[in-house]
Image 1 (cartoon, each protein chain N blue to C red):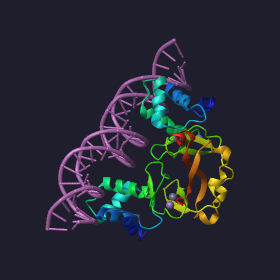
Image 2: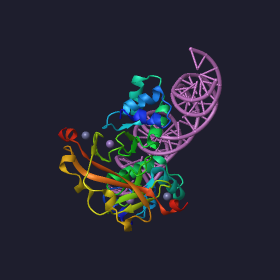
Image 3: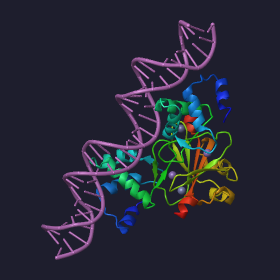
Length: 138
Length: 138
DNA sequence: GCTTGACTTAGACAATGTCTATTGTAGGGT
DNA sequence: ACCCTACAATAGACATTGTCTAAGTCAAGC
Ligand SMILES: [Mn+2]
Ligand SMILES: [Mn+2]
Ligand SMILES: [Zn+2]
Ligand SMILES: [Zn+2]
């Protein structure tokens, strides 16, 4: 996601130290942080960054389609910078570990017209739950 | 779910007015309420019921497998009394309307071993998102 | 009808998310 | 290089969702 900042600048984004730091924290494709986890990591690089700015910036990145909100956690939303390659998630019910997964098939195609109730269906979110090898050993 | 109360009594549950009211609110298979929505409806029938009791009772029903927690809403958990027939959910991105759906195929079988990373996978939650006919018309 | 341990309650507390008034600044214009 | 100004960041209040505790209440067995 090194070119993210360039893309955003091209879209008219004003570039600030705070936005750069949030983008740096989200760098790497296998990260699924809550907003407050993003804030905690951002504060290390830029101590005066506020919670409100982190929430605002994440919301903007979601609107722009650069970051996805996922509901794997039943408490806080998680923010996923891997927005360009469709994938789903595998979550450990004990420790909360999250892995990206790429199942076979297309779940959208598995929903017949008779089960769509007139909705225009555009997206599907799949969350597999289980126990990770670490937690199984313990 | 008219026999739910009988099943619970058989499992040693002490029967109280509060628990009866929560069960009544959850009656009907196409309901997906948040805890505070359950509380709001329960208060109509039993004005002195407390939030804590509603949260406690819902948690117990989930532990007993009589009600499912679903994460279709990215804010509050929703409680689904349709725990006996496996199904998934179709959610309107505009108004939040939720429908039960029964897709073809088994998403668990679509996750190959190579994508399981040593997890013992036991469950899958699928949420389709789109726009309902009402919202599309408006 | 008692007794008793499970249940309920009010409200404090915690975690997550939103909003506003004020202050600061990125970036274009000169 | 310096100014402007619209946009962005900040602190902190507030809202929503969920958890916990201490004290009072009651369902169910005797
Ligand atoms: Mn992901
Ligand atoms: Mn359902
Ligand atoms: Zn684990
Ligand atoms: Zn709708």
